[in-house]
Amino acid sequence: MKKYFYLAIVAMMAMAVTSCGDDPDEPQPAYEVFQLTLDDENIDYDANGAWADLYTPDTKVNADGYVFSHYAGESYGYKVWNGFAPSKSDDVDDYSSTGFFPDHQVDAITGKGANGAAYLVGYWSPFDEGEELNLETATLSIKRADGDTFIPESVKITNTTWAYYSNLNGTGGCKKFVEGDEFVLNIYGQDELGEKHGPVKVTLAAGEDFLKTWKTVDLSSLGEVEGIYFTMSSTDVGQFGINTPTYFALDDLRSMRLVEVNAK
Image 1 (cartoon, rainbow, N blue to C red):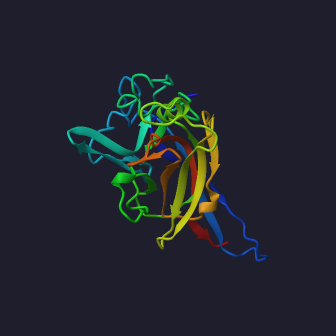
Image 2: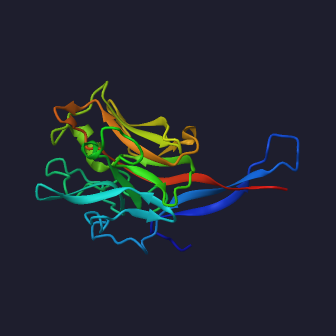
Image 3: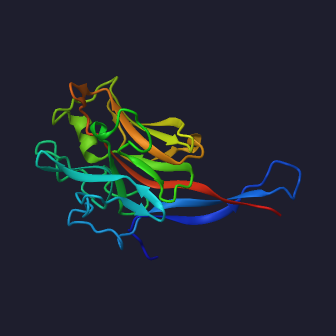
């Protein structure tokens, strides 16, 4: 079987959803189902498996009509980024003693994607968001390029090595997690009217229990949305906000959208 490693959301199937009414001639809605897959033909990676355009300004991750947010620039003479970045890194080593930044920001704790080598890493930067958080101001967002709505179904989530080992060891300005500590990913949807749906909460760490496998997360409660966006929270908070590295890994996003209503 040929394997693909470029980032794409591809149509997997079309299915008719039957009506609950008794009229067989009633128009039926038709949906397309989409699944996130990965292929390296259109995405370049460096020798360590990190996205080659990680620090390239004005570059977003575009895939089959969907846009994953990404920002790159400079701050105080340093290259910075936030949003989503493709990765094929298989490095799961603990760099607590030498530091994960900047060379190990995009390493999933699993060492691979949910269905192959590649996956996405999300980096949440609350300092770069507006006072009113929404789909347009969020540093981590997913939406369609054509503005159409879609219905998120599920996604797979896990930790990055930086977040995982920081919580485990309590290094680099982060506390070692104990009972009562928590590190959470929050997933929101926003509809066409600007109304917020959610959040769907994903626990990345709770006490001394740390997520280190791909977890399937049900997104169906978000309903039909214009896009989805992400924030993070942690019990390890200091003077300048969250101390925990605000990174997570994402793969196998599944969603569907209404194509048309077919009259019989």
